[in-house]
Amino acid sequence: MIDSYPLGKITPEQFLSEYWQKKPLLIRNAFPDFEAPVSADELAGLACEPDVESRLIIQNPSTDEWLLENGPFDEERFMALPKTHWTLLVQAVDHWVPEAKALLDQFRFIPSWRIDDLMISYAPKGGGVGPHFDNYDVFLLQAEGQRRWEIGGEFNEGSPRRKDVPVMIIPEWEAEESFVLNPGDMLYVPPQLGHNGVAESDNCITYSIGFRAPSHADILRNFTDFVGEQVTSEMRYTDGDIVPQESPSLMKDEVFDKVRHIFESYLKEPGLLEDWFGQHMTEPKYPELAQPDEDAEPITPEDLQEYLDNGGLLFRAEGSRFAYRQKQVKNYVLFVNGVSCEVHAHEGDFVRAICDNEAIGSDIINSTETLEIAAELINMEALRTELDEDSEEN
Image 1 (cartoon, rainbow, N blue to C red):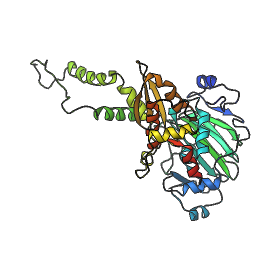
Image 2 (image 1 turned 90 degrees about the vertical axis):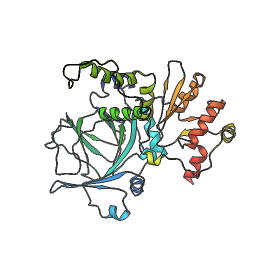
Image 3 (image 1 turned 45 degrees about the vertical axis):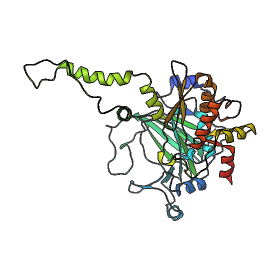
Image 4 (image 1 turned 135 degrees about the vertical axis):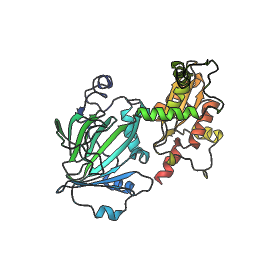
């Protein structure tokens, strides 16, 4: 567990009560002597990979025209870029770089199932993506070089935006505050607060730690889809208590009460909404990349036991999402990458450790049940061994 967090003199309790989703916070030297785990060359290399989500945003400072290109890119594209006023954005770097994933652990004073990913941007002087707003919280950590951040005003879907550009830009931007961030400095920006970042130096690298915030539309659609997959076609609207009425076209209030009762019955069904939300919030960011290798030799509980007996440790794999809930009967439901399983109450230490700790070993996986669950999570590629780590390095 992390003993300290990158909040300067602010405690996690004070940050959550006074700033989280309320107002911005500038934290000077949040990461003292910060060393970026991903260099500019490594970032460009990731942007050339077909499985990595990347973008180039280029501004013509003379005409204020903007261009958006989606990766993957090749080396020749980078060689042809102008000297200034462009930005390379690479999404979910924590999925590919273990050191980047470790950085996200520093932000677990927020529930870990709320953390989305680490996006890294590189820009020469003048590069940026224009004034905009996000519908989620974000920490903006300066890794290398300098970037000037401006903040001001609250915006939403109905706010004006430039329609002549391929990126979301707030027109007639007016900054209320401005800060120049140096390496190790960090700015917290709550949802819907306008902000604009411009590179003040070449080799400007900024890390954006974003958070998952499903929209109400997303919640409603996904929950009803989840429920719909579990009911049979015989479960239908019924009205065995109807009586003759003067106007056959009239829909009485009793009709709407019946429909309302259908919705309420599923919302009140014990565990249904809870299990859906746990699965939904732990779904992988890129489900197509989370499929296990069918040709890989599965690990057996016996193999895993031998590995643990020899001092082996298990780690959450990059890109995997873990969470859990405790049922009223004190059993636990473990959510991993959009699937769930129930775990007996006496295995609570295992559930908490596998979700919260950086690594776990034989002192935690000490029963047949936990050994079988851990083996299945390895085969799902949600957990990895030190052997996996060694093979990646080689």
